Every structure is written in structure tokens, then in C-alpha cells.
Length: 255
Ligand code: FPP
Image (cartoon, rainbow, N blue to C red; front, side, top):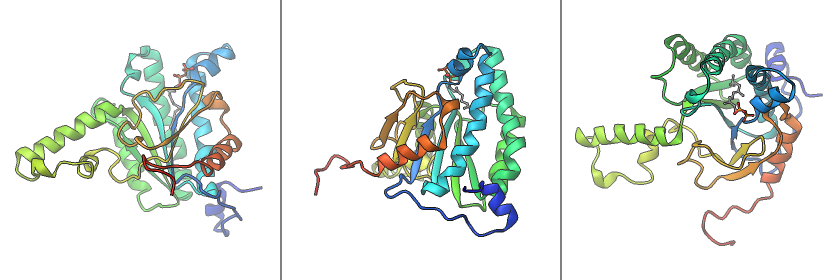
């Protein structure tokens, strides 16, 4: 049985024998939906589902390098999620802080590089300081790239990027003629990441909810019924395997 990344690195042992999935997506993005319903089905408060969802993240992150996924981007809190009750929002913010405290050591030691995307200005200063510290603590890692979207919205990201781009134009650093499909993404939060190859949404909803709007123009999508806290490494593996069979033409025709 494959050891966890943490065990492997901490023990300084050779990497477990892994067989990468042929044609595995290099970058997978996940809309982790269904925590609330999962909790309601068990007669528990919604936050119980979010805690179960947070525990699920580790298993999926750990499986990435074993399958051949180099980048995993997860949607943890959207710019629209502020509309939820104060109790749920505060509970989620507390969960993010707890996640960072609890997982930092394992993430550092298991070779995970963590980045955050989204607008940090509306977030609590203590949380943003912890996010920055985790980014710094893992910046030498390269085994797998985990990007966590918090207070992220695709439209908001494009608007913020455009504001910065317009500022550069106003200051004469960029010519308006130079603004094209190559230039604009350099201003996005995701500027160091490749576009997602596969976007997965759990819980049976078939919409993208403002996630990676620019970046997912040519992504493949999987909308699955499983609620996020029930999403397993095995199901993730099946989706990565099935991606390898897809015919991506990017608007062209088959050669
Ligand atoms: C959507 O489910 C989920 C969220 C808004 C929060 C996602 C957060 C986590 C999975 C846990 C925290 C993650 C990290 C990285 C610590 P929902 O509440 O909309 O579910 P519902 O549609 O069933 O109500």
C-alpha cells in the first residue's frame, strides 16, 4: 500500500513505486461542492460538512504526484460566499486558519508548494499573514503545486487584473497595442500556473460558479454526483484516467 507523502519524506525513504496515469491531466481544478448537503443528510450543522471536506483535501493532494497531477487548484471560498450566514462565514475562516496550523508541517515535509489566489484585502489580517507564511514556507517545494482559492471570483480576478493593466498603460509601461491574450493573463492571480486541463465539480451541480473563467476556456469538465466529503482518491483516479481518453482539439480538427 502506498505510504503518505509525509511518511515517505519524513523517513527519508525512496519514493514508493508509483505508476503514473497515462495522459494524466497536468493541472486539475476542483469545485468542492456538497459539504452542506452532506452534513444535512447526517442531521448535523453545515460546518460539520466543511470540516469533513477539509479532511478530504489531504487525501486528494497526496494522490496528485502518484497519478501525475502537477497542479491542483481548489475552490475553498468564493467572492459570493460572503452571502452565507455570519456563523458559516466565520466558521469557514476559522477552518482555514486551523487548516494552515494543522497542515503546515505535513505540506512542507511532503514537497507541496502552496499558493493562494483571490482578493486578500477583505480577509482577516491574521489569516492573510498565515497564508503568506505558508507560501514562503513551501516556496522551495516542487513535488506538487497546491493552489487554494479564498475570496476568489473569476470576474473579480479579471477586473483586478484589468485595473493593474490599465495602471501600467497609464504610466506608459505598457502600450495599449500590446494588450492581447498573452499579456492579460500575466496580470491574473494565476499568472504562474498553467491553465487547468480538467475541472471537476462535485455534488451534481453543472455550473462553473465564477471559477477560473479565463483559464478554463479549453478545460475539460467533469460534473459528478458525489458530495465533496465523499470524494475519494479512487474516484479521482478514475476521472484522471478518463481524461487520458479525451480528444482535445482546441477548436481545430483531428489530425
Ligand atoms: C461548497 O459546499 C463548499 C464550500 C463553500 C467550502 C469549501 C471548503 C472546504 C471543502 C473545506 C475547507 C478547505 C480547505 C482548503 C481547508 P456547500 O456548502 O455549498 O454545499 P451545499 O451545496 O451542499 O450546501
